[in-house]
Amino acid sequence: MSQTQFTPILNASLPAQFRQIRIVLAREPGHPEGDAEVAYIIVAPLDSNDRIDAKLWRAHRDACRIVRQRPDEQDRLGLLIHRQGGGWAFHYDGEAAPADEVGYHFADERFVVGEYVSINEQGKMHTYRVTTVSCI
View (cartoon, rainbow, N blue to C red):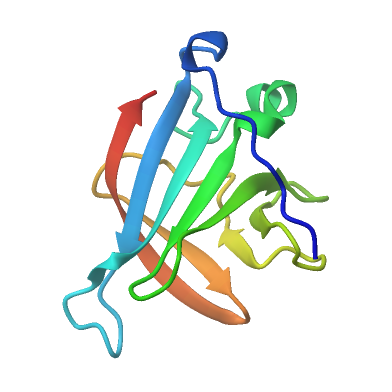
């Protein structure tokens, strides 16, 4: 299993639409208050409607990254990928296709603080809340 060596992102080389988005696990069975330690950090371009911009993603796909954070686990680094048919997913090095986690209707979701998004993780749907969106 190879390890991808991510090239550092030079923020000055990216369009101004790029954002760092942090989403945390929302309330669900087993986590009645949610869990801020179960999170993803997404680096992606957003359009004027706060949705992932597929055109800018295409031009800068190597800069569109994911960090998967879990308590008691090392952070996993991956890429935001655009799947055939228009869906978005997270892919980690060494993992077989299809991608490990799939954003549920991410193409339609707005990434603004307080909004909710869903991710299918190994066949189980989880809801996350957007907690920060910042310029990079």
